[in-house]
Image (cartoon, rainbow, N blue to C red):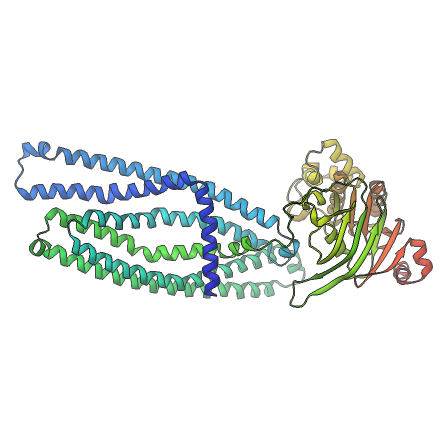
Length: 591
């Protein structure tokens, strides 16, 4: 587990470092301005005050000679504060600009990674949790840079300036101080490593909590209609309790770290008091130097007293970024080859050749197809029927390359789909799934999603052909009506007709309908069937249907059972064979 956390932490630093150095001018300005701020306001002012104290210690300065004696020191003090404040504003600007640019880049990186992952990846994760992890990953960078800018760089600069300024004046004191600091940093770092695991556990529990909350809210209708509010609350409470316990362990570890750090600070201040009391008598240290020693050491202890909270903040950063870093490092289950080319469809014939496929999500591989072959000539309309689990939908997912086969090949117009880009493949296939996929956008945007450049007239025509125009025009905002999340504001049949209108408008050479009319009533289905018949003209079409009347008029019907083709022919031929298809037809017609 420790190795894993170390590795993930290093990878998080890699991603953060990469985006930081992409905008290196702002990071350099941040570094210089933070160092300048620490020098001018923390070291410059006490240094000038020390000069004044030493001069006063040399003898009385008459009132009329104050400006003539101290004018240089007064001017330096004013300039020191001007440059200090200027450094402060540059520090704020550079950090803010860097955070804005990095947040944009990191959010884009996460989005690109998630959107290009396979459906297997997404099927195994909560959508809400992924959203939470993306937000945490980008925000964690901002938190880290705030810690670095306002705590780490000033603390490091403080140590450096103490060495440069005080070492020539009081070498023994500086060496003792550095020895204590080395022990202090070592102790805090060892505690930091232990806390790193606790932070990762807490962040993981928080992500699971977000996922559970999202899952419950997204399915709130099922929760309420099943009377399962208490069950969902108990499920939420169990994960929430896990967050509480892991956060409590992290709190105890952080408090212990703070107690150790405070003890070390007390020792350092005791050493400082020893030198302040006897420094002049024992070592001949001037009053001004004693002022600098106190000011610099006090500032150092204040900064290092926050080291515990700094480490806690850094731990929280890496904990929040942990899960997304793991995802960013995951290989794509379905990836384009480097030499992948775009698919060019001139005819639209499809060939499944000796393919084998099995799901590997579980502990044991689950075979769906073994040495499966099916050829669909260009322009043919084919129906896939069979009982649930026979492989109908999986076959279309393989064609769309939402998952990859393990053996064999799938060709479109003689082109192996594994050697072409996924985007060009899917743009040649109009896909209407059983569950309509609608965005929380306007009806017009949903219909034109596959063709964003479509005109208003083309969108209306597609809606008319899908028998959707009438109900759309009855809506208060017509085509500008917001459908709600996943189209929740529309009925099932309305959602399906919007999805069909999208497929009609896409006008792709290959059409895949996966139970596309299952959510329609009988009257709507009859109207849609004629629209689909027109849509399928001159195109290769694969139609999956449990309702056999949907596929009865197609050129060919393929019956699947346990991943194998058990029958293949026209509706009439299959009825005459009196086999699997005839049995399914008989059951439905009798019903």
